[in-house]
Length: 493
Image 1: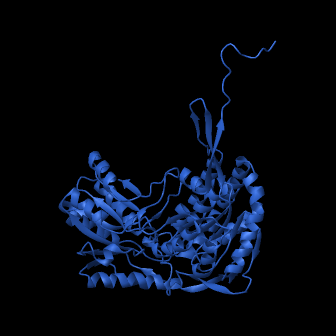
Image 2: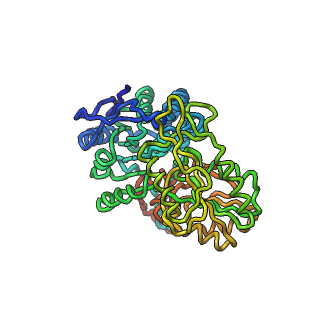
């Protein structure tokens, strides 16, 4: 029974009170480790450590900070198999997915921002012949980074890496539902000899540790990924304190399928975009809108493919869907299936828990679920479920498809399948989403801005957007000396 510890000022420490939380393995339903139940005291100590470390860390040359981040990336890569296994046990996701996506992306996050730190440039403006204005970008100081449970190391490093690259010190809080790889990252930081206090990791609940971090006056910037309701609560606390906020929140993403699409590629990718990571990705497509002439064929083929997906022990190579994160989350997903049926929906496949034999007999598994005949404005089509549940609906025209796609309070991502380039550009322009994929899904370039509109968040992550968030711009105006009058040049003899 491993004891996860906080990482404060370079040391691994339990909660001051000695209180701890159970950490469950979703695939077995059993407690397999404990973590600190931290609160204001631990956050306060971590803030002091970060404040102490900040002057030296921020004064390092960008190249020196870059070397530390590259070192962290190398050490994560060296422990990739161990970290993938830890991620699978902690979240219930297939270990093959953690091995192929989660851990390599954590490595890429550190390497990308390690390189970006040395390329981050400022602007200058010549004000006629009178002055030169130039902009300095200086670190905000301390950054609070709060990450979710669905892609734990992937998204934790997505926040930490740019904050550190920009010269800030960080107090981070990973989700209490999936803390193990953040703890392993603390061990890696010690092995990399990252200066004490530069990164501090506090474990605990959002209600205690997260709330203390958000409210702390010493932390001017908060980066959060998670549910929209929690994001609103964070904004209510942070906004009156004039903190910088980056909120990457929920999604109810549409997939628009036109009859002229590359059908085999679309079917394969839509299956993946619907059910990867048990549907527990904010970018998953959960509303499948299909042109009427293709609808019946798509429905038949998609339902058959979804029903054939292998749900089982996440440590087995053949498993395609593992366990969902918790018993409470499984109950939430099932409650939406019941709601959908009350709203007139018809369950075409799935809709029930899965019993997995052997060591996973008490785990929290859910069948891939496809629901048809739901009205557009019903709760099932309007609210984020965050599980392996999708709805199907036909559309007659491009205009109707766009109206259905935009008819939700979220605006994170959208996916369009068509071979008509003009239509693709037209829809991309009209879709209310921060990201639009055309004939693909999750094809990411870390230089591009990441984030959503409406209830899907505030601000953008990724590339220069992230480095700008973690810095403050300062304009400096230098008046130029007037040129001497013609004929009165100084004599240099």
